[in-house]
Amino acid sequence: MSARPTALTDPLRNRGTAFTLEQRARLGLTGRLPAAVETLEEQAARSYAQLRRYDTDLEKYVFLDSLHDRNETLYYKVIGDHLSELLPVVYDPTVGEAIKKWSTDYRRSRAVYLSIDRPQDIRASFESLDLSPDDVDLLVVSDAQEILGIGDWGVNGTDISIGKLAVYTAAAGIDPKRVIAVNLDVGTDNELLLNDPTYLGNRHARITGERYDQLIDAYLTTAAELFPNALLHFEDFGPGNARRILEQYREKFRIFNDDMQGTGAIVMSCVISGLKVTKQTFAEQRLLVYGAGTAGTGMADQISAAMVRSGLTTEQARSRVWLIDRHGLVTDDMSGLPDYQQAYARPAAEVADWTRTTDGRLDLVTTIRQVKPTILIGTSTDHNAFTPAVIDAMCAGVDRPIILPLSNPTERIEAMPVDIVPQSKGRALVATGIPVPPVPYDGVDHVIGQANNALLYPGLGLGTIVSGATHVTDGMLLAAAEAVAGQVDPTPLGASLLPDVENLRASSATVALAVARAAAADGVATHAHDDLVQAVQDAMWQPVYPSDIDPT
Ligand SMILES: NC(=O)C1=CN([C@@H]2O[C@H](COP(=O)(O)OP(=O)(O)OC[C@H]3O[C@@H](n4cnc5c(N)ncnc54)[C@H](O)[C@@H]3O)[C@@H](O)[C@H]2O)C=CC1
Ligand SMILES: CC(=O)C(=O)O
Ligand SMILES: [Mg+2]
Image (cartoon, rainbow, N blue to C red):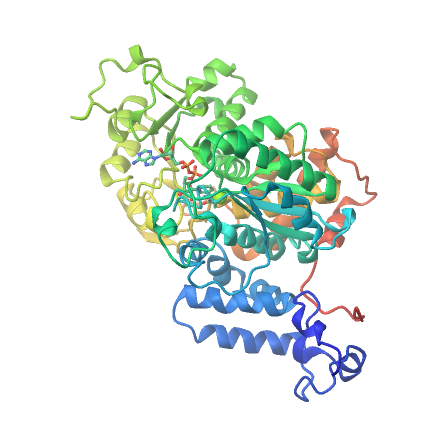
């Protein structure tokens, strides 16, 4: 029996029909492939033509997922050649659909699974990868409690870690050999999954409290010990845990919470661009956040910090922020407010005369009429909450309101730009979390930037890796936000607030450079480079077949 054709089954080494005859002989693949020897370009053209035959994005997702598991170079070549078309397929919003069907449609998986029921297995689970301390740049972990805007999906949420990593590679050239996707399976409170015979995760309710905290601690400690240079990215944790983990461990480990810090920073980019149009400063802004969870309060933190940099005191900055959650405007007489909302709770006396709904809430339209926000952000998952009355109220308050309905996926968005732009008579400055086409209004195409953290976190990660930063500092986040905003001129009517996704690779390199410089300025960089621009370029993995092959 001949040796197993491992080079054909290892997606990191596989080249399929692109293996030359000489390589086939060296790798023991003689007779295992058809005669033609193809180029990567020819393979990519065939794969793309195959992809185009599928009707739905979910079918395309499944096709690309199997290509990913077969040949990573080819997968990234196809995605990279069609980035704006395929990013919504491999990532947000299609990944949300795939996650809902993950257990039912399970094929195979490249992730590491850490179960709360077997914490003793954490080390062995990583060691099974057979990677040395210097082999890993990045881990993305999720406990899947708040996947996008679709809630708790237990082990099905594994694909958010894989999808985020795919964007890191496609957008910023993070080496796919040097990353690990992790699912923390702490159970699920999703009854649908608990009663689904095909469900593949731990079949019990979410474990909270001490056991949960111990798992997080063990994950961080083990991951940092085994892979001391890696950035530890947290994704789609529940609001309480996301903030608590970040605050508790931020000084100790190289961690990054994408939903709080990444989203906060991309929103900062939108606001920086918006203020170039309105010719205002951060200190003049009034921010209303609708949906005060992980992402919404992360944005409130970053925008109020920008107000402080712009000359206000912390108290003054907080007094220019309003949060609305399920029970209406967040006020300090509400009982049981989560700690992350308390800092922004409005004094009850201030709203005593405001008109309430029949069930006693201070709603969005009332708050807008009273406050006249300059910025309205939606991170509520409350579909269509930004009604025509909401847009009218925003436009009555200020000339060019910044309106950012950011909830994902599509069925959760607070309003589609096609409804906002005409309602505001072209005055609203709009960006969304999902990709949407330009909106024609009054002879002008209003281009809608995609305010998705995917425009920012890949470059942030690359800058962190290149600089060897020991921590992700606020200065690095701000540098990333400014670098994104610096790539567009938002001032012509209808111009986007953000760079185009098609240019994401160049944009990520620019962001990485700014982040690496900020890491050095903040004193957290551990790698010095004579030529940082070149160092960023050199660090970016390219989807090409190298001239040599690994014969093992
Ligand atoms: N564009 C982007 O880059 C990002 C977008 N998001 C999106 O933001 C949304 C929220 O995500 P997270 O903050 O992680 O979730 P989360 O669960 O932490 O926060 C959602 C908040 O909205 C509140 N809420 C729910 N229904 C509401 C209603 N009818 N009225 C007012 N508030 C309501 C919830 O009580 C909660 O506080 C999701 O759709 C997510 O996809 C999140 C991160 C990044
Ligand atoms: C984009 C993202 O991270 C989210 O919707 O959760
Ligand atoms: Mg997320």
